[in-house]
Length: 151
Image 1 (cartoon, one colour):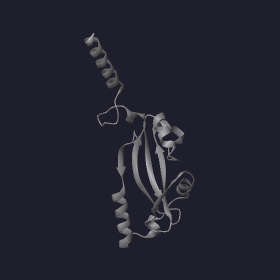
Image 2 (cartoon, rainbow, N blue to C red):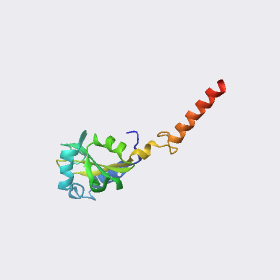
Image 3 (cartoon, rainbow, N blue to C red):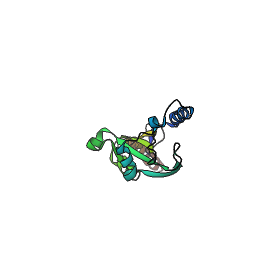
Image 4 (spheres, rainbow, N blue to C red):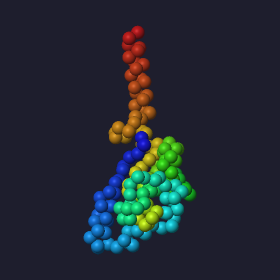
């Protein structure tokens, strides 16, 4: 997505949890504890993947996208489909997305990543995501001055 920014990837933390599990320092019941709400969100709002569960290896993982932000008001904390996120990103100034992977077979779940979305990412803030209205107005003014000088 064009406005996606401030991405935090939790893959190192996931590897550490799996290493602890394989070493026997953590039990399967400690990491396979998806709540019924999370499993329902995965069923109805989740995005199926082709990656196998690292615990049971019999089911494919499902990604669930949760949205949080002040402008969301009562709908903050709800799971959204991947197709709803670009619409929200163009509607709202800024909101946070948390992506959780879930196995519906063994209840494995882990936070995969988090990032910001929203219209604020379209304005130029030095990160190369887009130009501001002032930049566009300046470019138009420079073009107008160039044409007047040629006359």
